[in-house]
Image (cartoon, rainbow, N blue to C red):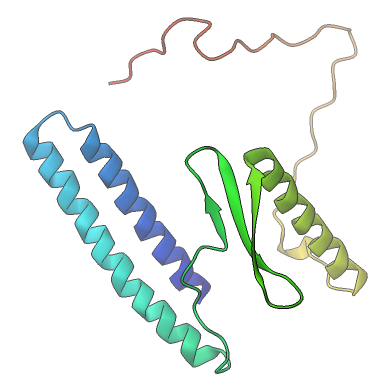
Length: 159
């Protein structure tokens, strides 16, 4: 099921990128090609979505249903809607800023990891090895300050 979800998301992202590129096309032919590519990816999304719904219905109890809305929906103004249910099964929408959403996600992940650790489910075997960080400089010199975007002039052109 996870592979199907990843495939649906990947095809959807490809369609969105193709649509965005078509909006910046420099010729009618390029626009037509990118629009057609987006349509192909949309068709794959529809096909994979039907497969995903079928897999969910086959693999989960009869009460499980595919939600028609996104439980987490990014908004164009940089905010995030979190669709949840309270203990009385009433639908709620929580509006978060991007920073708040990131913090909530980090806290939920950390709490989940701690909870799993406390019940004896160790996660470290599934995580990639982390190399040790190089030691900090003790000579008192600081690294070069980063320049804000655009402060050093326009970006270099890439062929």
